[in-house]
Picture 1 (cartoon, rainbow, N blue to C red):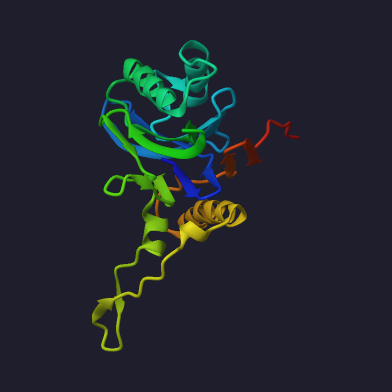
Picture 2 (tube, rainbow, N blue to C red):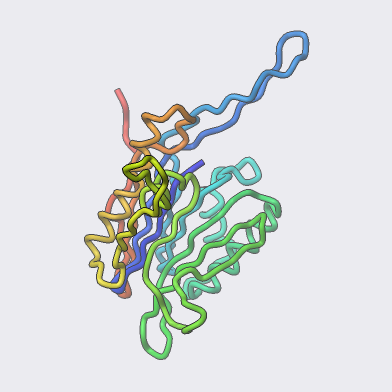
Length: 247
């Protein structure tokens, strides 16, 4: 499992993800009896957010990241080399990504956030999409279809119960120990600046990791946090884990 988040505010798009890859191991006893499956940590150095520099598009992935027994990083590189044109706009990148992974594994429990800016009538318009390969889902999450205009907010995927519980409480106990409606304090994304969007994305991933650490549950979100910033005229890594030697 993973946790990824994409925050879209008026000036920028911020994408963040954890680095943990967990796997479920099955086995059997010497006499052939199946043992209960065990979830274990395979790595804390898995890339889940990627920057396509030529297309100026960001991609985050969650769910199954081993497609055809190949790491997601290798698949993204193959997609970039084999399918994408240097000037492909974000909607074409999305089409080609879905087609590529559908061919590799049509029923994959793999989902993506795909984000970037597209020139429309000379103006840079943010596009943020969420798609799921196995469920044939595709949705532009930063568009209000009723008003046909861009909206601001955030989308997350993967192990989302921690942050959902914090940001979307539905009830609490009153003085008589009876449930009452919880107050809702909105986050005003329309007025959020770039630094606050970065801080919020890191907060969401870090809070998920830190909360799960103390819960009696599988620790399937963890490791370093990668953060990618996309703006109309610039895209850069705010933080990204690097290869290094260990003693």
